[in-house]
Image (cartoon, rainbow, N blue to C red; front, side, top):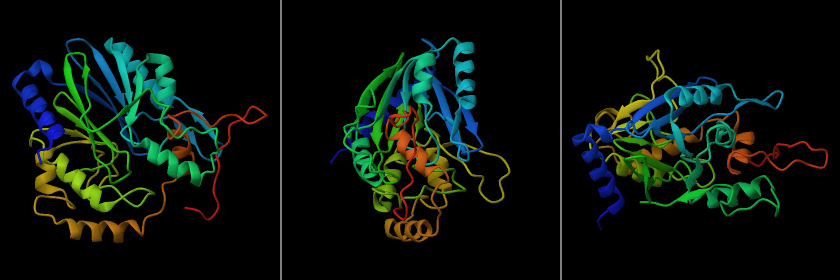
Length: 308
């Protein structure tokens, strides 16, 4: 069966290679506290922009938030004269809080995520006992993307690809010649993301990665995280399909699915949960909004005991 969304994405990338004006301009902001790369991508001809995987600074000890990281994005967007059309999340992050609602207030743009966020909301709604007031229909977001959905960023063609495995709802957004792939892959020397969160699946992750690595070798890949592989002294968040196929330590060309699943399952069983998983998931499954304030006007984060 032909993978029509993949074929469309491939044609889009090859077209951008032929016509330099259709290549996206990308500026990345890296938050060392959470090891998160947030990207601002824009069309050079119309200055239309998209913000992907933004970070809301959060101090776990005090429960206080700040906008220091997001303010850097605001300053860049205004300095470049960009108009924000979208605030996109590649998935419901478990390691940082999203700043998308605050950035919407400052810069505008519709908030989008993959349609399978409803599965994440259902699972974690139960884990955190969110109750009936918490909608599990994705209505906290302005748009839910499905596999193959096409959209425009100014003059740039864009398409969403569903790449589950790390979570059920992971999406890759290909804008012009650049693909923003969230936690699906890391730099070649670091490998791949975990697949042991509720709803994760190492088999699906492998197949999603192979799907992405079927894109043209020159496709620019922008990652959501980097942790400095052993022997590397600098953070990195941009690579290519060709570099991943040639050198990714987990999923290079020739890697076998059963071996990957065994490696990933064994490795994931030894990993601790992310430091910020409790606040991150509860807020990000709500589209970056805080839980509804209680009768004293304060929002609270729940910590389920002996559940995760």
